[in-house]
Image 1: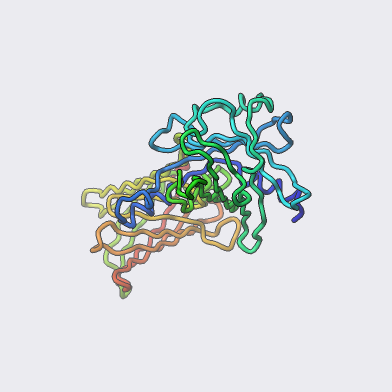
Image 2 (image 1 turned 90 degrees about the vertical axis):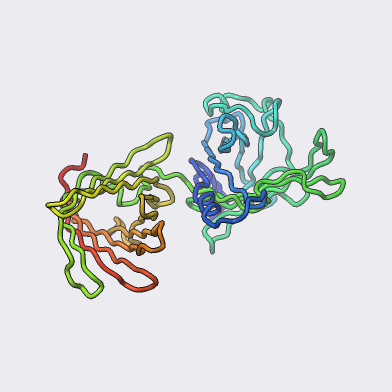
Length: 354
């Protein structure tokens, strides 16, 4: 890939909406002690491409928000991407807003930023990023030249910043810190200078196949024991809803099932869609669903469900749909302590896609 193609690829990967929800959830799930080195605060990142020829040909604008102060842009920068023939690399020139604080700034609409001229920004060439391709990992690595990004802090004197970023097709990782040059001590760092892991928020074209199954499904539910013996059969009704809320894709599923002469059992599962998966939780289970890999369009879906109560079994489920989307078939296996304890099979027809 030549530098011109790399530049456009970098620009495309850098644009979009990102969040670190999975990283925050993983940190909570691991049950580690509360400590600054382990803190993972929920962050969102919005990156837009500007039509600002007065600044450059390829101009990006990003704002990053933290959960503790959502009314302020913790980081707010304009970046100009260009080829650097002397380095044989893509250079990202960082433009810092002139006036006001460096961090935690009031949000500013992209439509206003793209009208600003060069005089609205400060440039610090030592703080520019240089991208190198890592094709074996399908990513680009960007970093500053070591020791080059220096500036004078009002209280801490001469300071050096260190910043590094990784751009994957659907993820953006970065780490950031600054050091006092007088004694080499850390002046500030983001989450202990470990990587912040951002996932790209899904757009409509990137949603998994399960989203296409929204609507109301009527089915026949059959339960089997581990040896294949039929335990019981009863009807089921499943309603799947997918919608956008606050810029994020949400998932809501309602199951009504049970023997005909008994009260119906109602199960509610709610979640969100990102990183190519549906992430959901119900009263008894939490889990995820993704497309079966290897074929486009997807041949079906895989679900994995983990119980909240260790006494309940883990569930692995495969969903297959007819080409016309009017019928689907689900087969699930229940596993406990590494052993099969039961199976279910559900045959369904779609009553409505509304």
